[in-house]
Image (cartoon, rainbow over all chains, first blue to last red; front, side, top):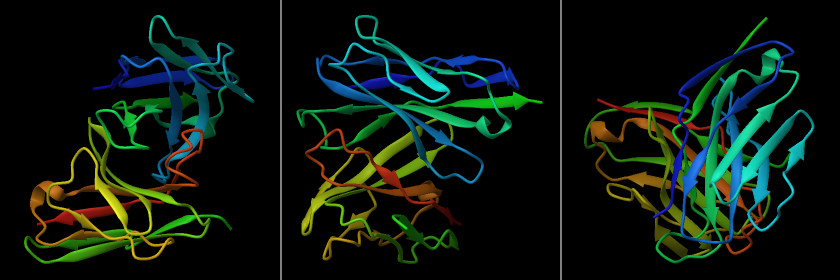
Amino acid sequence: AQTVTQSQPEMSVQEAETVTLSCTYDTSESDYYLFWYKQPPSRQMILVIRQEAYKQQNATENRFSVNFQKAAKSFSLKISDSQLGDAAMYFCAYRSVSNYGGSQGNLIFGKGTKLSVKP
Amino acid sequence: EAQVTQNPRYLITVTGKKLTVTCSQNMNHEYMSWYRQDPGLGLRQIYYSMNVEVTDKGDVPEGYKVSRKEKRNFPLILESPSPNQTSLYFCASSRSGFRFTDTQYFGPGTRLTVL
């Protein structure tokens, strides 16, 4: 079964600085999708960025980018020019493209990293 | 506005009293899913539905039921709630369960407390 590990329960960054959140995963599959979701205090789950495993190019969305290392099974999120509104819980998630051994469409989440942004 | 709605947003109940948490989406999505979020555990899938009348168990289905009679609605039913079902519940939907590129959109969450 696939697992997702976020080794940093909490992180802190100064406003306007850059921070990197770590995520590793375990899978025997070669094709899959990886996501970062943001959960602000409102508790809404918001998709931040998505990466297809078959694409070598790292995904970027404005100030958010990922460092996808497929061989190392690593998927870190970099937030540049951090803003106060970036303060939230961040979840890394994995989604299989096959149904073998699990439910279709199931997002497997890490336990989250709480990011604080200091003014 | 495209959205997933859940009701109620907050619920406090007692052990054994049947309850239903509703979930509705207005995006004509085929795939819908329920997750629960517990401290230190992240989100775990309870049940999912690939389309109308097609439902299946996720990772933690015990103590829950679902139904999918209409495309837009996917209620979560707790026939006899117990304290270990105290949690934050999310409903999610995506255009298709087969198209794994499709983003899952989440509802605002329902905070359930079972005394």
